[in-house]
Image 1 (cartoon, rainbow, N blue to C red):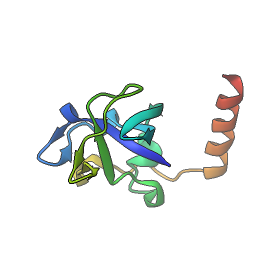
Image 2 (cartoon, helix red, strand yellow; image 1 turned 30 degrees about the vertical axis):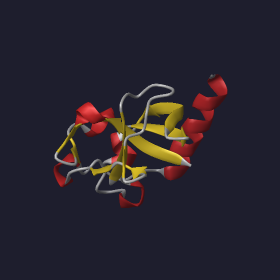
Image 3 (cartoon, rainbow, N blue to C red; image 1 turned 180 degrees about the vertical axis):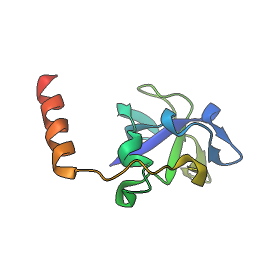
Image 4 (tube, rainbow, N blue to C red; image 1 turned 60 degrees about the horizontal axis):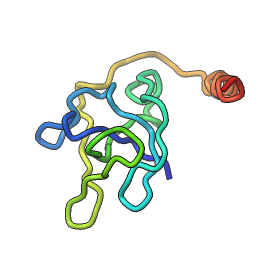
Length: 108
């Protein structure tokens, strides 16, 4: 499963300070086992594209491979993205975005 992950120094009072400092990642045994790019505001913070907005984020000690996922009572430490973090970025052409993603993956 892919999670949205940020670092503990990007959290104050249970909320994300800078939503642009959230990455996609995979977790295995409470450690970051896969890490991808930063979230894209156009899809993750866009009030005009609500089906993909990031709302909750898990917390790691660092955004690096093998970073430790923080926990509370044996569950991931989860924080919220504040309402003020979202903006109107306009509509998103999902097919075009998917096409761009596939091209980027092929070029790597």
